[in-house]
Amino acid sequence: VSTEIANPNDAVYIGDAYTDVTFAVSQVLDSWYYLNSLFVSPAMTDYVFNGGSALGVFHGGCGSDIQLHSSKGAIGLRVDGTQNIVVQDVYIHDIYNWAELGNEEWCGEYDGPNVGNEDIDIQYGYTGTRSHGLIIDWASGTLRNIQIENVESYHGEANGMTVYKECDLALQNVVVDHIHAGTQMDETQVDALQLPNLTPRACGVDIRPDTVVNVDDDIGIIAGDDIDGFETCYDDDGATSLYGVVRGMQRDDRHHQHQHHMYHIGLFALLLSIVAVVAHKTYASSQSEKNNKCLQTADEMSESTPLLI
Image (tube, rainbow, N blue to C red; front, side):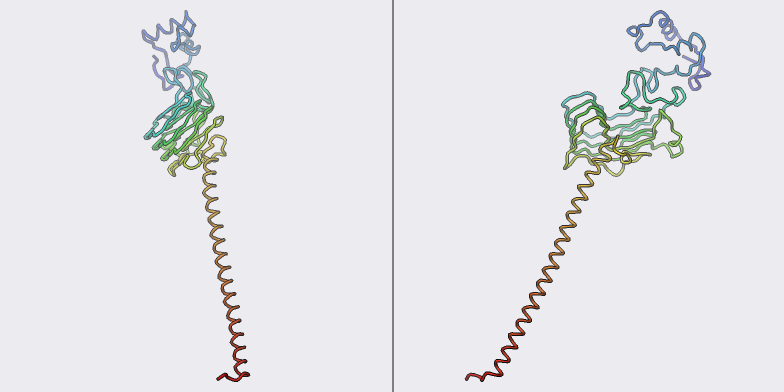
């Protein structure tokens, strides 16, 4: 309980019965087993007992909430550490995140949450603004007949589906569309972003490194045309978005290869037709000349040979 939190450097601790007891207990106990979420950091002790700055006090850790949970944003369906799972015939829609940008003053620049040994490969930057239709990590199994649409983040990342590390999955008939990142921001605001805030990025199905995903060749991932942000996974080089670059190119290559084959078949048929026409005309011309010679010979014979009566 303080006079204010908007300007931490000007805040003064006031306290109430609950917070006073909490801070008093911290002076005689230091065991996490007893304190748990009531743990008082050295910065908080300095602020309460010595009148120090509140900068770095009004949070349990960078990128976390008041209950010491690292921020994960808005998620339609989350799967963690499940083996042999089958998810099918699921419709995920209308996932919106209206959260403001992460505060760049209290913690300064940082790579990700630091509350409970979070994996920086999964939670990089300020993750409270994310909006995900489906996320899955450390899992194995099959996902089929999944439709995801209308996923939006005002100030952060938006993905239809995100497959993080250590997965072994098969994807079949996953349809995603209408994915929008950073819808309440403009170019000037995005250009000014610094860590922990990241450029709002959009992706239909984002398959991250260190994972295994088998996409059905006939009907695997179908990404719609309405996927936009200030960056998209389709702009990447493939390091962080296997489907956006590699799978998409493979699917397009098969389409272009089919068109290429059809072109050659058509060209071959055209050439065959031309050859047939030329051969026919040549044969017809040859037959005409032969008939003319036969007629000429008959005329000569009729002139030199008397008519038989």
